Image (cartoon, rainbow, N blue to C red; front, side, top):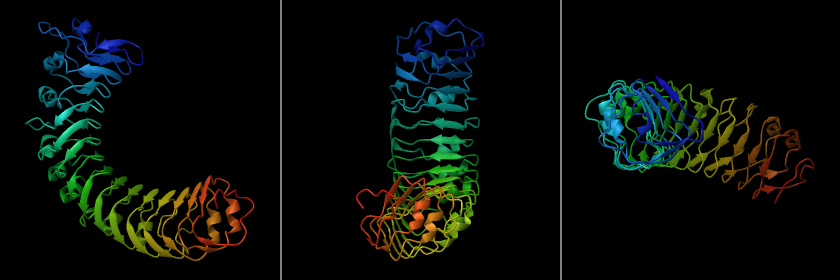
Length: 388
């Protein structure tokens, strides 16, 4: 038997795998979505199998890493996500299995510092150790140790210190998630310039500072750039305009300032734009977002002036949040062209005049906030306002 698939059942499977020790031909074992439990290893017994793939992900309490792992040298894929384990990151597992390309230990209750193997591992491409209890800094040599990484998720830990510049050596990296840690310092230029295949960069909810993007950046493959919940300062650099495939830009909850650049409209692929909770000021440029955008969040800035033609022609717009700014003049009549609009938040501004009757065209609307403005005149009969 080369392959044993027990996935999606109600089995109770011992993490030692003792019942399978005599299956000498076993190479692929899938225990996905069963109950994994900790049993007692028998130190005198060794498994007859050499596994290639092992999927333990699901639920349970596995205790410590079982001894059979130490006898495995041909592993290529290991997933033990959502199994509670004791101990530190098993760097020895990567060291002992030179052809291992994927290791998933998401939400596995691991702790301690993040220690890496000594030597470089050119086959290793996917590592997910998110939502654990690791502490200390990200090892400075991580890019040298894993030069072929394609996917890396270290989010939801207690990691501190800076982002190592050796990330720039991961030329094949397409997704990097370091969010929800306590990282500080700047985004290294080597990371942005060296990782020219990067499609998803997620650094949300850290203590990062400085400019949000290096001036030399190209990142033509970048699809998602999430930098929200940090302490970045300065303006939005023009280098982001080079990200011609960008679909989501979130720099909310930072300390950014300056005017909102009109060149954002040149990023025609942009679908979600979140600049809220910063200190942007000035008028909105005319048609500053691409026509196919669906969500725009600009709340809690210092934007001012009339809305004029800022969003004219955005027929795909579903969410527009301009609340808590200093916008003035009338609500434009062309807002009635947003046939897909579901959320319209214009509260806490200085808008005046009547609510345009064209809002009655917006049959998808489920939330409208016009509170704390200087609006007057009749409320359109087709709209039910709560607390208006």
